[in-house]
Image (cartoon, rainbow, N blue to C red; front, side, top):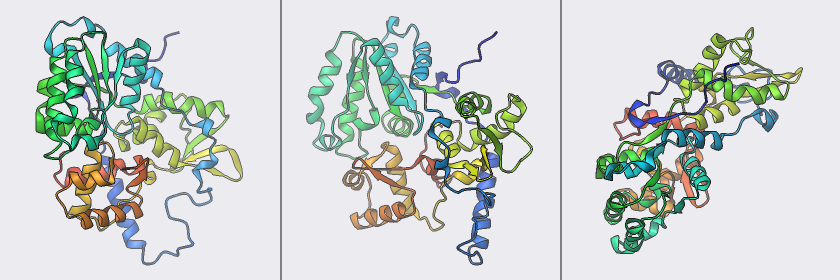
Length: 384
């Protein structure tokens, strides 16, 4: 029997093409209009009108065993295959390889897993606060990178080696130059938003070459990823808006219709798809073996209706840095301190910004609507 194709695959960034999101954008607009039009008349104790009437609103009732995990090991296999022969390349441009990905693609975990397998040296990023001291603070680190002529190394989380600040960017320039001059192979992992900025501001692609990226997941791949754990729990899954169909029944046409919509809403991003899938699942009290899946777009977090330019600048800075400490957010924005803190608090109250581990970040359930808004407002966005 032929083995199914792998779920994960890495290819050049220029080949990345997200599943069409046109229908998802239309659904978001209609949903926003409907909520706005009915907000003044809705009984606050009534159902939300999202098709979940009669279902328990707690998606957590679906056992964790019915949800897959991101398979870092399988993704590392795919990355190793994409890098096959890289270490034998004898050219300046070929010695450095970069792998990038958006929030939810686990780009650093995958690169670190491959480095651990191969026993490569891992170079962790410095404290971002050190970047503000000036290039001298990192000169020892960059000299170490440039002089190391041993086995391949991994430079982890390039987004942590820069800060969008006049005081910090000279240090990043030194790092990119050191990576290019390094005599032995080096793999670099980087968040896609940081890469977009570094490419625009410092010509990162010209210095380090075109990155690799995890190819987008389509409906069929989501079926092979999301289906097995659901089946192992003896659960039947049906789409809430199409009760006569099964989501996981081996019918590729059905899988492509139902899960193709999820892939489009998530823009092919595995972490976003998994989070929206988790949030969409509901159990009915009288059908314990049946799980209902609400439309994926209904699982996204709604953006506040009154977002302004200052909110956009805050969201953009957070994404450019792959999450950011609050004090450094002030350094990265040309806005008064009190304005940044107020807008940050408003976004946090709306659930569009989360805080943990000393940093602020964008929850995956809000990521795609935030990205869409920033793109529409003319901000630099990533290639995913």
